[in-house]
Image (cartoon, rainbow, N blue to C red; front, top):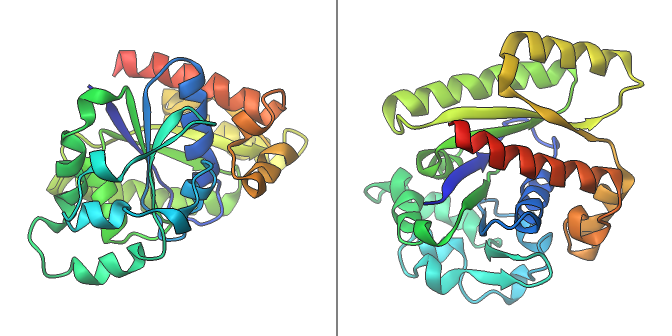
Length: 256
């Protein structure tokens, strides 16, 4: 049965999408069966997985409104080695359309239950805001992976996210927990980043992943080629770090 993880952080620009697609590609590289779910109307994770969001006949929008199943809407990214449940601008309208429907926060969970046995990992790329879409992701997930930069404001945003997760855990999804914090865009030469990293470790202990993703130009270039860095340039430091992170994830779920 697949483990379902949200990649979430209420602060924008922290590398959620980069983390989702590179972790998906890294897990595929180490022999895992992966479904990547794009819950962001911008569709960046879809495009970054080598899938053209403009060409998609069915998307997660159709799945949430129950006019299609995941089996019908998913597409295979041959270059990346995993399946994609894509998103495009249509998804922005789903927020409004879902206001009055019943079980609106459990739509994704219900849909994923049908395909869960076909995968080892299901990764959900959440939008930066706490919206009905993010709530669907959090209700469907077993845990949350939080990518964060080692900066002061990132700690502030983390407090908000932890409170949100507690509320969802209490009211909607008792399985939900923080799986771990992933330090991304890390530059060891910057003293502040080292200090924040040490603070994180002392406060969250083993909830902080051992793998650290360095600041890396090749990871930043990869989306313009419609690929995760892990596929675009496997030899880059950032790509190797994500593959290492994928291995750590596989080990970590054995202890959950």
